[in-house]
Length: 325
Ligand code: AMP
Ligand code: MN
Ligand code: MN
Image 1 (cartoon, helix red, strand yellow):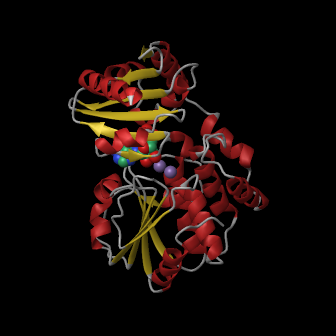
Image 2: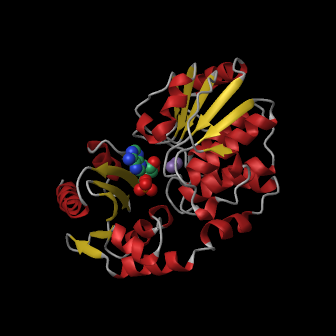
C-alpha cells in the first residue's frame, strides 16, 4: 500500500460508517477511470451494505457500456439529500457539471482523486497523485477497509487502471499497480474481454474519421508539436459525435520527434476543448492550470472561450514559450 494520507483515509471510514445514504459522482465527459472508479466503488459500497446512488453528467461512450452496473447511473441531478457525497477523479468542482446540485444538497463531501492539479474542494480531500488512476486508489482504500471486492467491482477497477495507464505503459504504472492488477485478475475477471470491449470494437465511421483527421495532422516547432483540430463540420460529415473520437491525441503523440500533442475539439462557436499529451519533458498540466483546466504532467486538458482557429494560435504560441523555457 502506498497511501500517503492514511489519516485522511481513516477519517473517511468514520464518515462512511456514519452515513446512511451515499451519493457518488465523477467528471462529465466520462473516461475509463471516471466510470471504472465510480462503478467499482459504488458496487463495493453496495455489496458491503451501504445505500448508494451514482450520478454522472454526459453520455456514456459506446465502448464502456458493457461495464457492470452501468445502467444504475443517473444522468440527471435530483433533489435527494444524501448524508455523504463522494466525488471521484475530479480536480475541481466544475468537472461534475450539473451534478453540483446534488453535491450542494449533501451534508458532507469527500473527494478521492489522483490529479496533481486538484484544488481541494471537499470537506475531506484524499489526493494521491502517485496513483495510476482513481480506480487503483479506490481499490487500495477498500482493501484497507476490509471490504469485500467481487468480480463485478474488480472488472470496473481493472477498466479504470487499464485506460488511465494507457494499457500499462505510462510511467504512472508502478510495481504496486501490477500487484493490484494481479489481485484483480485473481478475482476471476475476463481481462482480455474487457480490453476487447474497450479497444477492439470501434465503429466503422469512427475508425474512418479518426484516420482522416490523423492524415491531416499539423506539425509545429520543428516537429516537436503535433496538432489535430476536430470541427463540428467533419463530425457531421461522418455522423459521429465528439465523445466517440477520443484516442487521436495519443496516436499523434506517438510520432518520432513529437514532444507534445494537441487535439482541439470544437464544442461550440466560442468554446474549444484542448487536450494535451506529453512524452515527459514538458509538463502539460502547468499549461492547463493557467487556463483553469487540470490533469497530470503527461495528460492535461482545459477549455478556451475562443473559436477553434483562435485556440490553435493561442496553444501553438503557449507551447513555443514552454519549449523555450
Ligand atoms: P482529456 O484530454 O480530456 O483526456 O484530459 C486529460 C486529463 O486532463 C485528464 O486527467 C482530465 O481529468 C484532465 N482534464 C481535462 N479537461 C479538464 C478540464 N476542463 N478541467 C480540469 N481537468 C481537465
Ligand atoms: Mn478521468
Ligand atoms: Mn484518472
